[in-house]
Structure formats: C-alpha cells, structure tokens
Length: 430
Image (cartoon, rainbow, N blue to C red; front, side):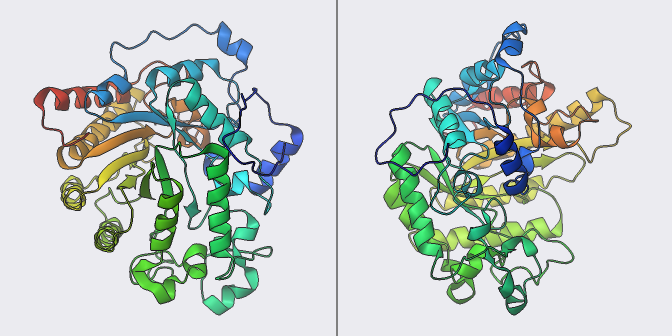
C-alpha cells in the first residue's frame, strides 16, 4: 500500500504481510544496489512454530552489554524475513535497539517522489515497540547507494563533472543545488510526522568518505577525503569544503532532539594504507565538526570485520583515543565478521576460532579506548546476513547465532570480552 505521510504517530498495529509479485518485481528493479536485499524470505509462521526452540545461553549478549551501559541490538528487514517467529523470540531476548536494515533507506520508503511506502519501516518500528526496544533510523544521506533514481544527478552532467562513477547518475535524476535541501527537509519532516522523536540513533550520513581503489584515487575524492558523490555535488561540497555536511546535522537535531546523531562509516580497521588515510580524514572532519558546534554525538563504525586481513590494532586504539578526547561516543552499528578471505582449506572450527579472536581483539580495543554506547549486529542470525546469502556454499558464520538461534563461537568471544571488561572495570564504555 502506497500512502502519503499523515500527521502524528499512527495508531496502527502492523499486520504480518508477504510480498506480492509486484513487490518482488519492484525490489528487483529499485533495490539492486541494496546488497543485503538479495536473499529469500525466512520460514513461515507454521514452520517456525514447529521448530524446537534453541536452548538459551546462560548469559545473553544484551545482559553482558547492559553491565557496561551499552545498548545491544541488531538489524531486521521484514521484506526478507516477514514471518520468522524464531527470529522474533531471539530479538526479544537480545535487543535494546532495532535497526530497519533497508526499511529506513530513502530508495525503499520513497521510491517515487512524493509517494511513501512505509511498510518495511513500520515493521521495524513495530517490532521494536513490541519487544520493549528502541528503533534506529538508518540512513538519511547515503552518498552513493540506496537512493531512488530521482535522487541522483542527471546523467547528462556526468561528463561535465568529470566523475567516472555512474552510480551517482541516472537518466531520471533531478538532484541539484535547488532540489537537494527541500527534498531532504521534506523527508525528515515526513518521518518525524509519522513516528515522532522516538529514534535512539539516526545515521544522518552514511559512507560519505571514499572507498579507495586504483581507479578512484584521487580522481573520485576531494581533498578532505569525501567521495565526489551525488550529495557532495548537490550540496556544494566543492565550494563549501569540509563544512558541507553541517546543515544536515543541524536540521536533523532540530527535528529529532532526543536522537543520537552519528556519521556512519566503514573501512578503517585494516592495516592498509588507504584505510589508514581514511581514518585520518575522518578524524580531521570530526575534529572540525566539534569545533564548529555541529550537533554530532558520536561516530558510527559499521564494524564489518574481515578475517584474513591484517587488523590494525595499534592504529585503531590511537584513533579511538582521539575520538574520545573530542567528547564523542562510539556506536558499533553493523557488526559482523567476513570469512570469505580465509583459506578455503580451513575447517569450520578453524574459521570460527580465527573470527572469534578477531572480534575479541576489536571489541577489547573499543572498550579500552572509547566510550562505547551501542553494539548492533547486521543480523543476529548468520543465515540472514548478506555474507551468508551471497556465499551459500561457505555455510558462513558472520553473526553470533546460527540459523537455529544457537550461539556460535563468535557469541562466546564477545560475551567473554564484555564480561571480562565488566569484572576488571577497565572499560571506557557506557
């Protein structure tokens, strides 16, 4: 059902729904850029009810996080898994926060300008309300993906701008200096009218800094490290320099004064030159934003960890201490562990041990050097994570639970790390 936003928080109780053939065709066309939308739906209600309930662990991740003043949660997309009672039980047990994996993305809830399809956003908000959790909003600005065709730059401007990345352009694109602000404020107001000031965290901007490749560096980024993307162009990044994002944060803070506003980024954990450079660019911007009085409360670290790549523990600890000195907290917003670069010859147990050790080291660095306020997984169950969906032959374990809601070694490593920090009192979290 497509509808326009209505004033006030809706007095609805969302009914369970299944995607129609039209929904599926629309998603194939409009959601191709959303990599995590590629899987099939979860088990039916009858199938879930017939499955034996997994034995609950002695200590939940949520309990271990709460002991340190950290909110624990996960992403959920009700289009991918509209009816999954086993998952609902797991999230009710584990979640203080719920992120609508794709439901809060512009390209999903307003695919056509002026017409709103709230179903997937509504479903995440309702789930959060029903289990006593708080919803997040991920994300408003996405620099290169997740936007409908009209929120891209006109295809005819690509040669003029000298930008080779075609994802920023569309034949239907009409994003410009004249349209970017009214469209942005209009979407913020539509969401505020529908839900009110209920969000725990809002990702005001997502992945606005560069992803470096041989082709992209330095042609596709500005001197501050920003992608020369569609938002950067329309909002005047070339003229405004590092300040171009500031008005967006100020506006969202006025609309949602209770929410924690963050800049959400990825790709800074590895001991490789481009990630170290990105870390430096990010810290420079955060330092300037704090000095300018931008209402930013923390940094969102997606935390898509990569097994088989060299984790830069020393560099991350230095970065986190600098963030802490700025008075900013840290939100781990999309945590999982990618095993696709580990040797195929390794056994399942060997892979699990390596991934658990990486997560243990990463989380320990976070807790020792930053004020961690949130730990949110990109799905609690491994079978629902995009890594497992894209590599079905691996039987991957990117998340703390398996397909039957049984805890994996990744769960054990994280719980033990959290409990150890609580016992020693060394954590900077909370």
